[in-house]
Image (cartoon, rainbow, N blue to C red; front, side, top):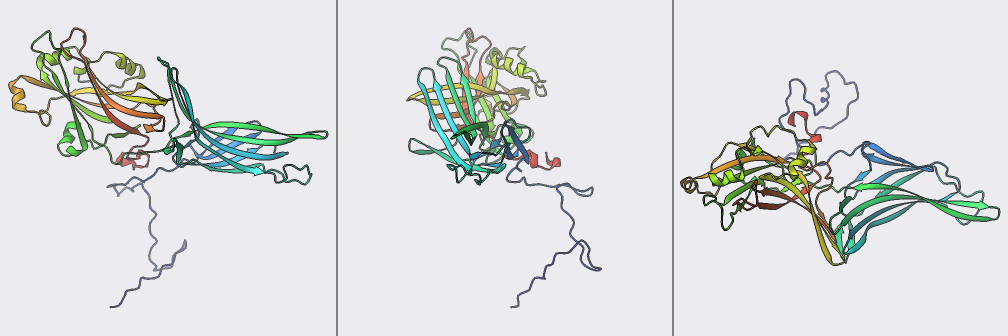
Amino acid sequence: MATSVLPGYSPRGPSTEAGAAPRPPTYSLQPTEDEETVAITPRAGVTNPQGHFIRAWPQATLILRDQDPQARLPTYGRGGRIVGELGLTNPDKIVRVTIKLTGQMSLSVADSGSTCATLCSIMHVLWKNPHETQNSAAEPKCPSILPIHIQFPQFYTSEGRAWRLPPTFEATFLGVPALFVRCMYTVAITITRTRSYHLASWTTNKTYLTMVTFRPRTRPNRPIVLLDTVFASIKPVPEEWLQIVSTMNVRQKPRCVDVKPIECHLFIPSIQTFALTDTIPFHITLCSSIRSLRELLPADCPLLQTDNRNKVMSKAEEFRLLVADAPIRVTIARQVVVDVNGRRRLRTFPCAIGKLWPVPPHAPPPGADHSASAGSGNAYLDWQGEIKPWGEVTSGGFSTSNLVVKDFLVLALAPPNPRTSSLMPLQLSHPIRLVTDSWIDTDVLHPGDR
């Protein structure tokens, strides 16, 4: 059996001979007038920024590559490399230049003391005079520009166990007891010079410090599947949605016998891992007697208004909604847990508040008996909503030796008058995970697919 031989290949120059095959057209992500983008696969990674971070001091200038020019501090990911140059204004009489990457985690609780852990401590010598102890006119001179290359480690060791480096994080809680958390990373440049006076000589050290942001990137393993509405997505792709059921109970001696427990159904994406920039959709269904629903939601309740969907809330409005006694409220709560000297303390604070709008009633939720509900006079109320972490949240959840940061999606139901109402307040907390990156990088999508 003969084996066919592939034709030879030779690159063609700018000009082609007569009768030769035409050169292939240039490729572009942008379609021409007679083309249309059918589908596009996002790239696995995001293109690194091409800017520079510059920090100038009187005697030195630090230039770090691959940074966002608009960023306040240089940012690096997991295993990131600090690459750049150090410019020296006056390199005369310099005998040694070093760079040191330091990471520190400090935890402090008013009634438990404090603890500090070294996350990383890496020092590189950028230049050293081989005749540092000699005073010779022929001694080598320090270059005015020194290259920098230092890498973040992947892990640190604590109590005999390896832990991933936590991101840059800071939290302050002034309650009782007060609690302070700080994970910070710094780059220190130390310049050693020789000084002399008559027959005496000595060395002096000058250290320049700059903070850097460590932000290890993580993304979900699949996207959020949403077809128009949450309820429209449950039937075709039920595996993409998680149903959480809870009950708002009544007091042992209700003021009205017609008040019954309210069954609450919360639907969220089953992935349960969301980016800090993702808008998380959810759906709420309440099922109970009309009397119970009216006691929870009076006729003048804003949650019954249909114009809430396109309303854009300011920060002040979000704060008022957060502190107000809304009958239905969906928030993202971040919990910070520290372990200092064997004593565990935790604090919880909100980092997002959801927006809800009523939708027409649907069929009873999966698992509910529609005939029994109709016979008992039960009614259904539905809301669709969305929630997005606030921009101040810059890091996802993480866990280290003495510090755990985790997030929860919280659904709270409270009647307008909790003390006199027959209904008991309900708070449903479901753990979720917040990560830095979305499953799809919108900045690398084709404009027509956004």
